[in-house]
Image (cartoon, rainbow over all chains, first blue to last red; front, side, top):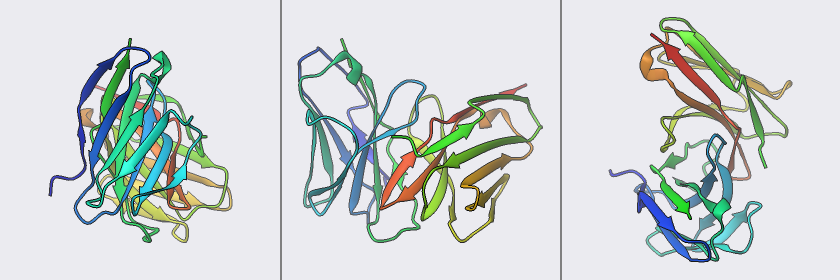
Length: 114
Length: 109
């Protein structure tokens, strides 16, 4: 079991550009959540996908959007990048409906906006 | 928004000593989890304690939960250099995991 895999591991983009980050959940998991972690801070919840729909959303602008595919993998898209979008983006997978199961995290994508 | 708040923000102790980190949260929860993060990479799940549990052990880890005070503590006994990391508490509400800002633990040789 490969666990949660994210790609790419590092990415450098220019202000105003668009970026797509990818996540494959742990086998058997059907829910994917995305987090943004700025340096020295805790992860901030962006949104969660289940059954190919956005189920919950944190306090992030519409520039942040996502998608979940039938195989449960997910993408995070960020448009019109700002310098402040530089962060570690983490993907977590879990099993919906089980309130007491742990979420598994990928190693993250380090995005740098210049 | 942050649900949990860890205390202290940073902690340095000698190898072999015990380390205690605290977490306070604001609203009712289904469970509370503790995670470790090394060098700004992925989060590793350490332990989950349900809202109806008061204490849980896993190896050198001991977690307590006081729902009346909306607080939890993580105790790492006999610390090792490899325990140097950031530790986060996270609360599960409505299938959403919300993290605190973390405690940065440094184990001195």
